[in-house]
Image (cartoon, rainbow, N blue to C red):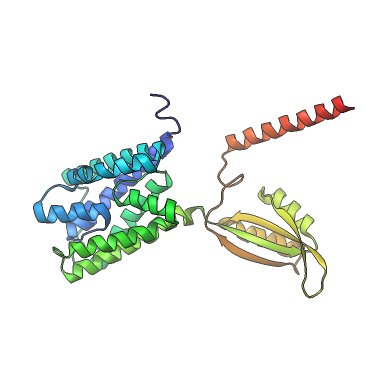
Length: 311
């Protein structure tokens, strides 16, 4: 039993639960209360509700059973467990808000706000779930598979599949409702991609200067950031130059520019967006850094001992 749940993190489960609550809130309080559909399997559950008054919390479970069988073969044990948790939690969240709606939000006369808030709630909920390594079943599993095997972004796949479901939903929706629903799923897809990619976005800089050592030393001292120094050659002057490559968080960019301008006002540097960054200083927590530092100390000790033995 312990081996079955190996690799499962409580933190990720909490994030998935919070994501499903946000997702369920958006579906019940914005989509359902205002007659909008949605994409994916959630859109199918809403369509079934509009046509046959079967609760979405029930149909969500029934529709996802076949996909869990696929997920077991292709997504792996950890993601499957997270997906089961996400699907059960989503059905629970939908049922919770069906029975105990937080409030009636009177936005029937402003469907633009309904579309925007529905998209933000659903997209943020799914984004958190995806970042935690889970899904809510349905199209989420299909989106993960598309991302894994054909490299299609999660948000783009979700929007394509959602558009297909909305087209089918037009047997119940009128044209205006369908257009507002498209706005909702488009906003949701953008929010999903932002949370998955943009939330960890950083900035990379390439700095060409004759004072890269001084700049690097100040970056380490003031910002606790490392850098990599490369060797380049100017095409016009044919002079060899050092190029400093450094990745920082967005909120550190102003400080980095100030250091460069302070030490070498004539330095040439460029700034690029980094959608995802992993490693020390970004995704390692303090415990991981300490482990790495301890390991480095051990390695240095072994090297020193080897040198002594050889002498």
